[in-house]
Structures are given as C-alpha cells and as structure tokens.
Image (cartoon, rainbow, N blue to C red; front, side, top):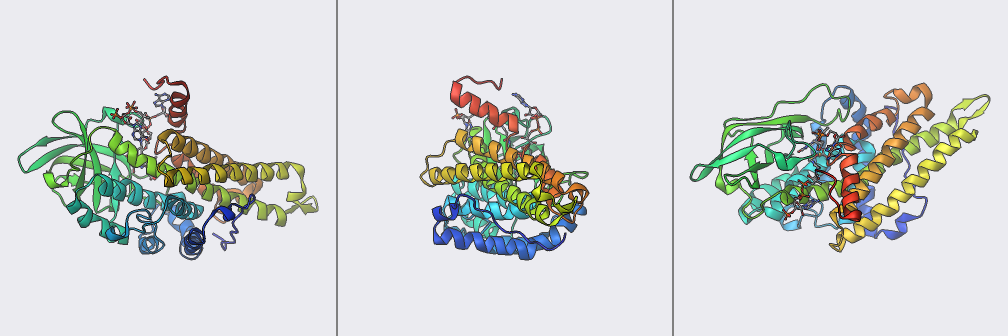
Length: 392
Ligand code: TGC
Ligand code: FAD
C-alpha cells in the first residue's frame, strides 16, 4: 500500500463531546495503526495471514479488555474509549479489529462476567497482555443465525465433562490458546466453558479460501471426546442469553469499528478526487463525484452521532440489545455502501492494493454477516417495535 495519508474527519465537531482522556486514547490507537498496521496490512491480506507480530501493540494500546477492571489486567476504561479504540483499529483493517473484538468482548467479557474468581485470575491478565489469545465458539455448521439449535454438547463424567461437536467460522481459532465454547449440558441447557489448546481431542483446522477478512485467521473448533475439567465451566449462566450478552458488547464495538472503515474509504476517495485530473480538471469538481462525497460524509456523520449516543447509554447501563442491533446494522451497511462508492471513484486504481478501499469493501462483507446478519438485525428491530417475533 502507498503511504498512509489518513486524516480523520469530524464534520459535526464530535470531538467536543469527548473527554481529554478519550482523545488521548483514540490518538494513541490512531498513531499505532498508522505506524504498525498500515505499512504491513495489505501484504498480510494478500497472503491471507494474520500478522501475529501486532498482538503486543494491540495490547499496548489497550485493545484487549479496555473496559475490564485494572485488577484483572484490563484498561478500566469506559465504553466510549472502547468504541474509539475499535474505530481506529478498523480504520486500519476489519480483520485486526476482529481479533481485538473477539479477545475483549467474546473471551474476556464472558470470563469476567460469568467466570469464577479462579477463572478470572487464571485467564484475564494473560489475555490482556496478549500472552494468551482466545476465540469464541458459538456458530456451528448447521446453526448460524439460529444458535439455539446447536448440537455441540457435553456429558457429566465426575470431576470433568466430555465435550463433543464442532464449531465453524471461528475468528482467531487457528492460533488461539483458549476457546470460550457454548455447548449443551446433560439437560439440554446452553452453558459456557473454557477449552484449552492441548486438551486431547481438541483441534482447530484453519478455514482457507476466504475473499474477505483475509488478514484474520478463521477456523473450526473440533471436539472429539475432549475431557474438560468441571472447574472450566462458567458456574451460573445458563441459556442463550449467555452468549448473546457477549454479542451485545462485540456488536457495539463493531458499530464503532465500521465508522473507522468508512472514514478511511471516504478520506482516500476525497484526496483522490482532489488530485486525480480528467478532462483537464480534478474529478472532485464534477457534480457526480461531489454527490458521492457529500452523501458519504453525511452518512458518516449520522453514524457518528448515533454511535456516540449509544456509547453514553452503554456507559449508563441503559443501552438495549435492540439499540445495539440498530447501530451495528446501520453502521456496517453505511460503511459497505461507502466502500463501494469510494472504490468507483478511484476508477481502475480502486481495485488495487495501492489503496485500502477494496480490502475494506471485501472485509465488510464478513462484518455485515457475522455477529448477526444484516437481516437478522432488521428482524430484531422489527420485533422490538412491533412486539411480534418474525424469526420462526
Ligand atoms: P430468544 O428466544 O429471542 O432469546 C433467548 C434468550 O436470550 C435472551 N436474549 C438476549 N440476551 C442478551 N442479549 C441479547 N442480545 C439477547 N437476545 C435475546 C432472551 O431474552 C432470552 O432470554 P431468556 O431468559 O428468556 O432465556 O432467542 P432465539 O433463539 O429466538 O434467537 C434470537 C436471535 C435470532 C436474535 C439470536 O439467536 C441471534 O442474535 N442470532 C444471530 C447469531 C449471531 O449473532 N451469531 C454470532 C456468532 S459470534 C460471531 O459472529 C463472532 S464474529 C467475531 C469477529 O470476528 O469480530
Ligand atoms: P445462515 O444463518 O445460514 O443465514 C443464511 C441467510 O439466511 C442469511 O442471509 C440470513 O440473514 C438469512 N436468514 C437466516 N434466518 C433467517 C430468518 N429467520 N429470517 C430471514 N432470513 C434469515 N461465529 C462464531 O461463533 N465465532 C466467531 O468468531 C465467528 N467469526 C466469524 C468470522 C467470519 C469471517 C465469518 C464469515 C463468520 C464468523 N462467525 C463466527 C459466524 C457468523 O456469526 C455467522 O456466519 C452468522 O451468524 C450467520 O450464520 P450463517 O453463516 O450460518 O448463515
């Protein structure tokens, strides 16, 4: 990729709504992305590999467990700080943000929220420092949008349980040290447990051939009579609300992250439109190109306002799952539309790795699908406003 010339855009002076601490955290993440992610990410996406060397930097900017209390190694930060970090990381690449989202919201959050004190002390500090990486197994080959139908299960065997089944599409799986896995117990209730790499019968084959999120490692989790100590089970949480409450946190982070990807596409297209000349003048002078840019910054600004307000509600513990769904759905769709328009504005150059737009566009095809598809989130809003369930 050519030099990262990114400049942030703040059309409605949103910075005035942030504290000095928010801005410091955001700027540190922004600088890190410029220095350590932008120069290498295109190469890693091209070769479909996760750049493991950035794990340390992700930990240093506070991307692993930003809102987990400091005593467990987390950042002790608020939800807006968490969102801003996700925004800056996804400005670099959605796959890198995925790694951070999974570690924070889908691994550290459940261990902190549902785990025993022993589980918290054993896992959280190592996850915060990046010494251990985690993944989250909910989706199965035959149960994606409908996780309640899962067939992965465990049977009681005294001081341990025997786990069988398979999960697929699992971010970070190929290199994760631990997996937070959702499985049915002897009573058919969904429970969460921590499975560690090295447990006999546990394997994590990598998924190849993705055209999207290529710089993120995706894989399966296969459990063949895996003996898991009972002390690895989350003691109290039962039912689908366990994994779904983790998703609330991750979807919230994605709502912020998508703004980062959109800003990068807009910024690239704006600069290109000022520098690229056709018919003797910059293409930014043509009305059709201005329409695209004007609509992009309008949609980005609306998403920024929506998401900041959601952050305030989340800080006050008042954000509902349906409000989070609305923001995830709106912002990812906004970002993918902007990526598509921005790519066209760069003409032929738009399809190359010289610019980040095509990579963002392809990445966003995963982001609009995982953590609940675009249509599932619409149905969540539909159910919230009408009171009728249209899923089944
Ligand atoms: P339903 O009967 O509606 O609910 C079952 C129980 O769960 C409660 N609940 C929630 N709790 C917390 N947060 C939420 N968002 C919740 N939504 C529902 C609900 O109150 C009920 O509780 P209780 O006490 O009555 O038992 O469940 P359903 O089976 O009808 O499903 C609802 C539906 C379709 C919305 C849900 O299954 C869904 O969201 N499906 C989408 C699946 C999904 O998002 N999968 C994501 C997998 S992880 C992933 O993609 C990671 S990508 C990571 C990365 O790389 O960034
Ligand atoms: P399906 O559920 O089969 O859906 C297919 C289509 O049917 C979709 O368009 C959907 O919207 C539609 N549909 C389904 N039900 C309805 C309905 N009731 N009404 C109307 N339309 C409906 N999962 C994890 O557990 N952990 C991870 O770390 C993880 N990482 C991922 C990384 C990547 C790159 C990808 C692509 C996925 C990842 N996932 C992960 C899985 C992801 O959450 C699922 O792909 C997603 O939930 C959709 O499930 P599915 O792919 O089985 O699609």
